[in-house]
Figure 1 (cartoon, helix red, strand yellow):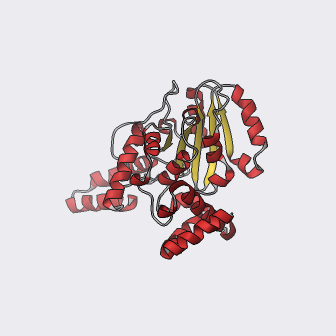
Figure 2 (cartoon, one colour):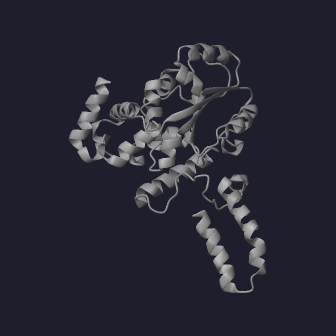
Figure 3 (cartoon, helix red, strand yellow):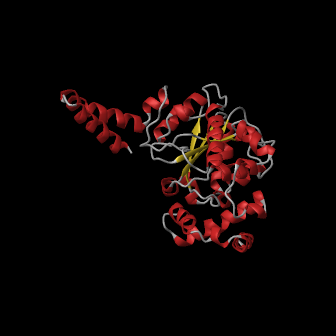
Amino acid sequence: WRQGVEALILAEQTDAGYVQDPLRRLSFLRSERMNPQKAAERYVYYFEMKFQCFGPHKLTKDLTYEDLSPEDIACLKAGIVQILPFRDNSNRLVFCLFLSHIGHLSEKCIPRCVLYLIQTPDRDVFQRGAVLIMYQIGKFIPDAFNKPAHMFCAPRTLDAYPVRISAIHIAYDDPKYRMLMAFGMALKSPDYRAKVKQHYGPPADCIKSFASFGIPKEYIPVTDQGEIKRKKMTEWLTCRRQLEASGGVGVVEYPANFDVLFGKGVISQRHFGNLRLQYLVEEALEEYTEQQSRNKKSAIIDRIARHIQ
């Protein structure tokens, strides 16, 4: 706590406007469901984590791709930690971390990547929180839950991110992890244990089980054979860099449930916003075909367009 307060004081001395920004503070309040004490603690932990991961020069600056180290960039490009480009059925962000691939990383690499990924101005994200999926693929490895994993999964670290982690899903396909998970959960607080859901079985079974928690299997960046999918993460990184270059204009980073997606494929077809648009069009189709005037037909199209904006 003392280190966090010192980091906060240093940030305020560097740029008081950044620290005292009402919208920034409000986002932390929303993250903690308008609980001032918890929001203040998260705010202090956030600056402490930012100081530890990026140093004093980035305390009062929004993080960009250029601030990441070569190790961080390699981690993101390899898909070891990913943010899904879509939200779950509760309109929450979804992160995915592959525990079996982090043994060679430094202990601050994963927190640095998550701090970069989790930046968003969307108020819905702060109110609803985010979902974390931790996937262990392959046979039991004694040091799989090593220092990088421990640092990232520690309650203090999870409480330092601007967005609240509201649910954690841990998936594994080796029964030896069950005993390890049981021992680990016994050491956690009741609030932490309430967030955690375990999924055991082959990758295909675990992916299907996520659907019952509002995460469609098409979104999970894992194949049925347990291989990491990197395409969507690569596209997201390109989108984020365009967002940074344009100053945040003209790029939708995280499509919300009511957004309409353009493109082919199952994800676009099953997206809630696209289904809603399809329903509105079908509902107005009879009225549209009955109209003889082009102006009246245009008015129906404008009405649908305003409805989905």
